[in-house]
Picture 1 (tube, helix red, strand yellow):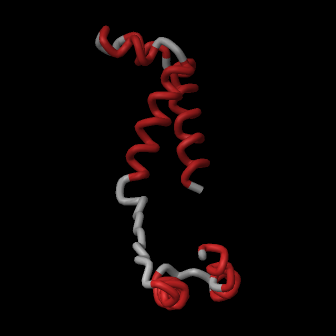
Picture 2 (cartoon, rainbow, N blue to C red; picture 1 turned 135 degrees about the vertical axis):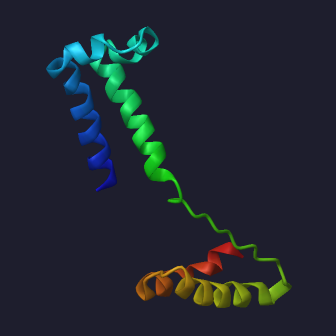
Length: 105
């Protein structure tokens, strides 16, 4: 949804160059490097909108699992179960992930 919104607004902003050429001609000279081309207007608008919509969007969390000998796989399974609920992982995905822990050994 966000990508469609960004693309649509960028396209409308770029097309406005052809619809209102007098407005863009009256802008200060330093803006002409961005407003003389429809493509450059769309790219600049898309980048700015993407940066605005990404504010607060990404949340990265990592889990460090230390090796505790033969108990490390059990610890990994317990961590997957507890963190999976916190991360809102679908239970069916957790059921598939926990048996695959044996490939980590």
